[in-house]
Length: 414
Ligand SMILES: Cc1cc2nc3c(=O)[nH]c(=O)nc-3n(C[C@H](O)[C@H](O)[C@H](O)COP(=O)(O)OP(=O)(O)OC[C@H]3O[C@@H](n4cnc5c(N)ncnc54)[C@H](O)[C@@H]3O)c2cc1C
Image (cartoon, rainbow, N blue to C red; front, side, top):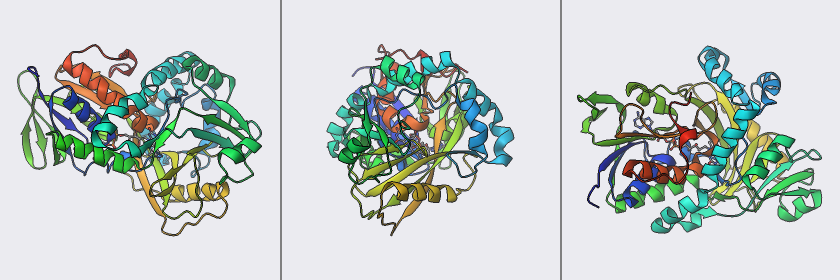
């Protein structure tokens, strides 16, 4: 390709690796820089859900009324570390404001546009890496112990209908058939036949990263502190291993991205929604389907290396130490789902979801520098949103018409 360029990608999470893969497919050369090996940030331990149906924002109109009760329980599904509250308050206010009915509909449309294409966008990357076994279109279940507890409110129904989501309500008997391992205490469910999951979200990043290298890319282990500027644009990265000359740049640095964009003159209200997981290598039960537990807001996903319970949101910044009591709460709820669970060899993990207040990512060109691209902020949906983001960034960077309207994901929308 005659106008092939060299791109430096900061971040070797699923988003950075997907951007690098698609930039290579567009004929460009790539160097990825991360202080950690590929996939060891937030992408390491997510719930693995890949859901084209995902079009219902976290911030909904009724959330504002539910928040006080939620925050009263420090180990509940949403918690704020009180010393961090003054710093988090502007983000929290914007998060609640994103729950206004009109905004919810806009955000939902933008979620559907991005997530609706998640499997198609992964397909060429998985094929090239010979990794089709890592992603399964298994269907997913929502479950609740309450009669109708999994079904959602009228607005949720309307959003799914507008997005054309396929979903079936299932009662207690059908739940048993779909997921025999689930406790009979569960009484209502929703089945999403078009959804799926990754059986190992960490290995997924690793194999896609290996393919980037096989295709001529370079991955360097370095921490980026900032930039050296020329007269017109950033000319070099300043790293802990010295300077690296820069032509074009993609910032895909997850929950740390705003620290870099601020140095490039763009301020974005990015916050870390810290989440936890518990991994059971020999769970002693064999669930067939990934399940979202609607009573306690977490996911239970069967993976190739065990059963994972993942979820909860803790606002406390990227630097605070993990509070693994939150992981133990997940385990306690998981035990209620699968009688006879074996917890031997269990491991715990915490990761920082990179989140903007409306839950949508920034997929954009820098407002200040035309050779700098932003791909971050995928919040609860970074696994499902990564491949389509990579495709969109490669289109933007190559001057091609983007596959979807990028206005909802602009950096300057706040
Ligand atoms: C409990 C939990 C469950 C989840 N479940 C799901 C799910 O089921 N489905 C789904 O789609 N999403 C899920 N997510 C969200 C998903 O994991 C994230 O959105 C996604 O991993 C973000 O990917 P990323 O590449 O942007 O960030 P990361 O994976 O965090 O990668 C960013 C990388 O940038 C590097 N970096 C940052 N700053 C610098 C710097 N200055 N110098 C060098 N390197 C730097 C970091 O080291 C890191 O490796 C979940 C998240 C959590 C926590």
